[in-house]
Length: 288
Image 1 (cartoon, one colour):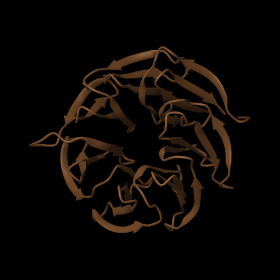
Image 2 (tube, helix red, strand yellow):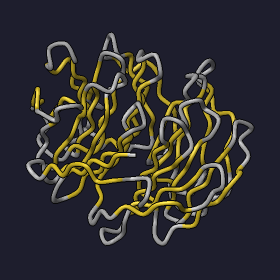
Image 3 (tube, helix red, strand yellow):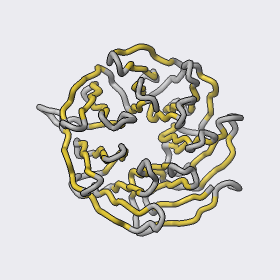
């Protein structure tokens, strides 16, 4: 663990199910098993706001430049105004409530993508809070490319599908995984994409959609996150007794192991100096 040092343990924030930094790095958002979202000053780590509205566990938190979106087990997606810390909209799928698996903002913040258990991906216009596009796809994870030109989705059958955002059409599938895709992430410059699967591998893909590395894991990969410089990839695993593995994206070698029993979430700060991890007992802040 030579390049990561534990600098803070926030035991006053247990059962953190999701963490995310604001794009400017000033806020750290933490979602809880109870449904609340706490916003902390990223420097002082003092709570500046508590967002209340979800009735059950918060599974995802994503930021746009001026909004925050949260996904909950209560079958709703909420949009929050970062100026007032008030809920701006509750996005529900009608006529029946549908569990959302994953959410992601487009890079410009104009669209929010959400995947649901009715095998449909929905694109929501953030300004009007209306669903403007539906894409037929049964998926567990999704993410926009940094240039906003593609939406990438990960399916239970191991396929990684690419959607063109100009035409809103399916264009290709990346093959290689043999089980469900739980997590997808891009490096900041878009040069690499990582996909984590129940097949106990994380795959790295280049801009030509070629697999350039397969990183073997002891169990299913639950979360992947690139450092802002793109030189490291943090991998959180699905089993509670396992740690966080950090890999070099240049050599494809495992470089660091961070002890984290019961991982729920992880996120790098935008400046790359900190990695925040959350589990059942506390939030930990690691410094590079």
